[in-house]
Length: 496
Image (cartoon, rainbow, N blue to C red; front, side, top):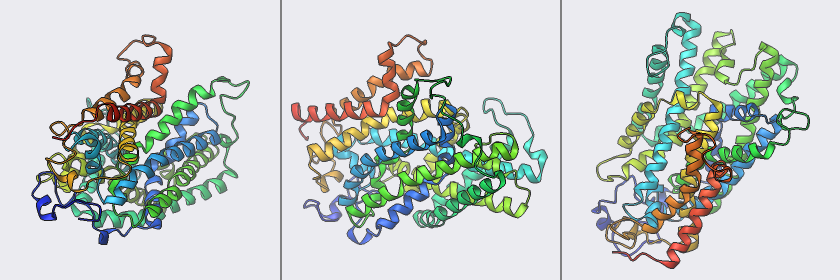
């Protein structure tokens, strides 16, 4: 155990059902991540195909290119704040996200935020796996055109070949999970420069081939005076900003899974600040600029970088670029969407579910969610997927930050986090205050969500109440934060 714990020995704690080697605090000797490591982590995670395509949804909604890139930058600047704050406990105590949740939600209740976070990660895992499988599918179609044909399968809505390529890439993910953390670290080390180099190479090619960056960078915002959506900018901007925050809302919670390896608080805070917002803005700009140039080069707007790469005729360039995309997508997927849910599922039964088994569960759920349907519609991608899960994760973030910084003043009893009868048992393992704050934090966004997914007819929900959904992360965070602090002060729960 590391400094900051109580009096119980490590031998005693290992006998607890809440303890496992995967969830144990990282000792001081295992803290090897400095500022450069965290900056590299975020450059590696942010430089991915979904980031490349992120601005397309905003431009499709009416923004100009600079408004879209600025919205992405602001969203990541905002989400950086809870990211650094939640990372503090991981760095100070060496604990992963689900163990961190025990202080606020209880030793059993911690499974609630952990599973909500894990299910979102399963969706992201499926999306990234679909992107990697789609790259393989398009490579195969170039060399054997007959493979690119075929009728969609019933229910699934994709062809048999698309499904086969998806499962092939899924299998590669499962192999890396089985190999363990060293293989994941190796992939991350080569991935960041690989995809950044590919993005910059695409940018240089597009500029040269198009004689500039084309019409998208010169077209006005549809919200400007005299344009079809004049005067409607802010009604679109704030929901879009909420969606951009939702893009990394998952990592803003489970960042202790990585910050537990940090040498110092300064290393994790500075590294994240340097690595996240600027990389997201740069890579989304690359996507916008290259896409704009494709309008001139090919006579049509192509947002998907995989589709752009399929236009190259040199087989060596094509295969190299596609393999780079596959490796980069694989590295992002494992680091961002497997490490945390594997820990979260392991938290359900620490002594029975290992990290590897948790990763396998993540993979299976990711397939069952049919991720190709999540990204089929750009509007659905932002206003349903990103905002909807932000409505769940915002309140969790508010509760964790309120508990750690306001209620406990950054002091945790490390031993009690692994003790079934300790201070964080609350009421049979559940913190009623935290669960109430979570429900109350989600409720304001629920009516608007039900109307958005058409479970309620349009116009059923009063306008101001429906609008709250478009600010879901902000509203949920603030409401849950306030309710949790008030609940702890007015009705503190006794440990039992």
